[in-house]
Image 1 (cartoon, rainbow, N blue to C red):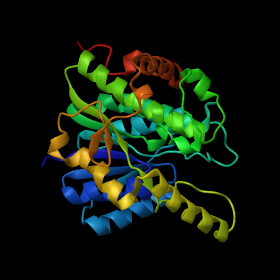
Image 2 (cartoon, rainbow, N blue to C red):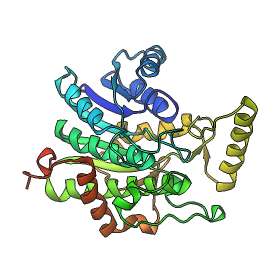
Image 3 (tube, rainbow, N blue to C red):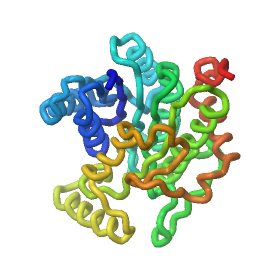
Length: 311
């Protein structure tokens, strides 16, 4: 295989780490970039991955998805780097329903969960599309929680992007951000197909409820954290979609590496199985409103995208 670069946001642990591991092992031609906020943890993960995969083409780059300027600096640094052509971007990093203690808003004044889970990845992928050739793959990690199970008595709705960007953090905001990941996936896939001659695919991925990650965290004693882990495992089985980062990481990696996904775009993949997302997620009006407002919120100019001058 020709040499290719794959960027994985938040690839230093959990789902992103397992995804990186599977891609790196699949072919030495892949150069993996772990794009992370914590440089120390990213560097440690990269060194461990090299040992585990025998692939030395694993490096790290600083990226804070809660900062629009950091995203632009990442893009500029990547554009200057001497790396193989960009082939794939895996938008894996995310903020859970608990948010970030003491940080309700991003550096640009956007609610943190929406700002990181959707808006940061929106800006990042639109910029990076400029670095891709005629073929490539983009994957947004969504969640079952874009349509919460009925017993949680939480209903995700869509008002408008500006209202969401100023909403309160919590489980409802998390679910809404995952709905936005789907809107972004479907709209980007549509725009690439209708406004360009490129064959870049864009899909959304559901990892299921993973019992072995630290994605859901609380502040407190080891006992309290242990109780939460047990509760999470029970909830995973009640929801009916238990998984692990190892299983879901392999399925996520396949969206980058497998030939069977060469031409598939605008789909929702539940751990390897193509399925339907919620009825609400297919609203084209909502997707277009989110796209338009996200351009304004992220200060992304149409001239910076691949959609201005093609076709």
